[in-house]
Length: 362
Image (cartoon, rainbow, N blue to C red; front, top):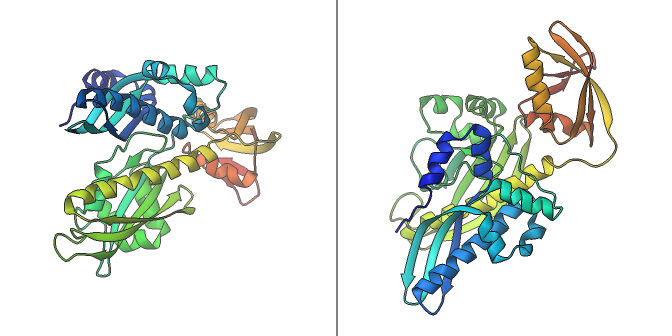
């Protein structure tokens, strides 16, 4: 049974500006499982909701980088932070209740709660990642050719929640022309950049489910099987990072979807942890860098300056001179200079050193 409590929230979502929608997405936690046994199924269900809220809040605080605060909210205080909830699936058997919940928290209330505790947290979102889900077996590797269960798991996931949203391409003719299965597997830079640019994304995640054994019945993954999930993230500069290996196994066709869907959370958590680290304000004194910013209009400069304020490593951007089509600034930053281009790239900016040795920001 699927019970939805998000009708009013959905209407508010459609009417809200983009910034408010992003707030809601960051503060929504989906896929929270609960399993409670009590004096009756009704009591178990009530206890399950409290447990789901606490589990979701712990996941939210981990997402925001404030996990150490999770034991400091009473059940009453926690309930006041919840805006809405959704029971995605539920089942009762005797005195036992199992359910799958999504919880939407109130962004202003959670911020106030954290700030009252003096907690540091990060809620800035990364640009979306294009996800390329590939199934690899001894016979072949599949990205676009078929709608695999692995691809379905990504398509059915909560793609626009958290700090790192996902884009799952439809696999149309233009997608196929941009990048092939072999190019995704080999990490061909030009093809990866082409699919990234098509979706105006912050990078590409190549997520591979490699089948190590499966029964011959059913589809290519088998009714019973084992495999290993690996993933590699490519950022806007083309730099790659492996996200580790995660063994998976399923014993029934019905349970396979849940197993595959369950691998997405640890991958998402790893991506968010990396984003928090990138988005963390570096320590140390402020260094300065002279930078030329080619701009066609003053409005273009205002847009770039606004984006710079969203880069944690950037302390200031002071104008030194301004001429037609060019602004010369002194860019104040913390941390290593080598990390600065990647940091500004998260806001869609390119910082590069020209042939003469000077720095350009576009």
